[in-house]
Length: 241
Ligand code: NDP
Image (spheres, helix red, strand yellow):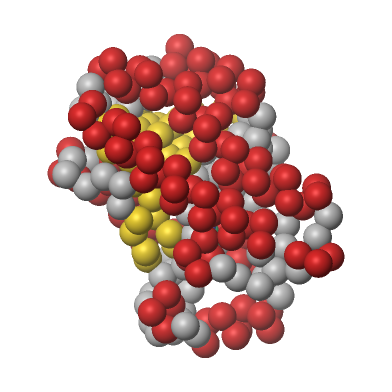
């Protein structure tokens, strides 16, 4: 097939499942990470996927990083904007650092990662942009005003960018996962997590592979008529409360 896929935050958690899923589907994959070099090297050794380190919150680092991926791997046909962080705390106690880090990493990265690839996609007449939002961007969550704001912004970004590029062979879609069993969720206090699982009709956390399978579809030619979509995948949690 020869298409190149770039997955941010692709060395662990949901991103690692997405990267390996796309590799199995025949893409040449590059995965980025922030600072966990040991994990990234283990992932590279295990999967043979090229890894690149830069901070998606830094626009210049993203532009330089995309240049490196383009020259070492090839022009990006599929971009998965997956990297994200939480800095939870109630808003009336939140400092500006917790706000700005989450906005820059989860939302600022949409500009900084997509801007360097979109012109090439338009010129080539093909592109797939898949953004990872969250159920908490759809319905809000206590202690996550910063995160819910950023993830809701991802939905608006997706829809507007989809409209601008619909005639250019580029689709832009967004996935809102519910609670998925990764390090990010392992950081949630056990009692809080028990309460969350009790609210999920399916009765368990999601698996990273369940998100990866949807990304593989969105990356494929088969999804060409789907753009600007907001896909919820949350074990029924969005309906339940
Ligand atoms: P993890 O914390 O398990 O992994 C995060 C990945 O993103 C790591 O590869 C990490 O790199 C990378 N990353 C974090 N910050 C940066 C940065 N500034 N620059 C570059 N890379 C960065 O997260 P998940 O797999 O759980 O989450 C993936 C995405 O899915 C996120 O956008 C998250 O908000 C979203 N999501 C997750 C849900 C869940 O339940 N897990 C639910 C809904 C949405 P490193 O290893 O170097 O730290």
